[in-house]
Image 1: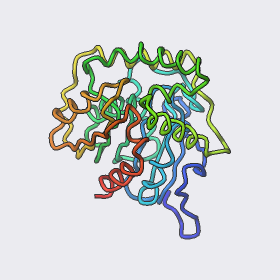
Image 2: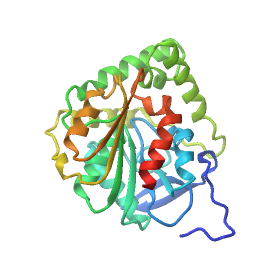
Image 3: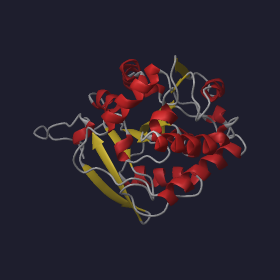
Length: 286
């Protein structure tokens, strides 16, 4: 439904209304903001993440120009059902959700596990996606991607011992700059005070982690089939999805653009949001 002239356009993620839609027996929780009409940008979120895990400093600048849709995957947050055991099945869920909303062309913004799901979606439904942003992610069968399990559990323990959020360890370097960036990022995630999402359950989290491990250990996808304009971004010291995998994606996706931020980890785009958000806006509005 297009915005009517008297309906104000929401461009702040903190104020985006919580909505639901049912597709294939699953009720998906989602939020949308920005000017309606035109091709929406659908956001694919990371491991263990809910609707509340998107950085408003990335979403809000894009919402000034584009219709944005974020959603909870099946079995996560306020979406019903159980988490699928493979990322390919998660891509099928995303397709069901997007088509239930009535969209036949989208742009994709993805981060980490979301980027793995987005790759599976584009390969299976090449006509659905017009432009693709892959951040903090890597290809199916990517070298050392299956080590994400050990890294994740190790950092959860470290975070518990220091009463921190695990994302401060998983997404950011442990130098002074990285620690500051991590705390600022966690603060930004709490800017929304109404209609906050339910945190992921332990079983759902473990299922997602195993699905990523399976993705990392499986045979590679033919990424030469991705012909969409593609923007790839990461920090130069990603411990979760090694930074070399962003370079691997760049080599395998013809014509893709690669941005690597210095002195930053998995959350490089969040640490450098002031530089990255305009880059994403320019790419998506080109």
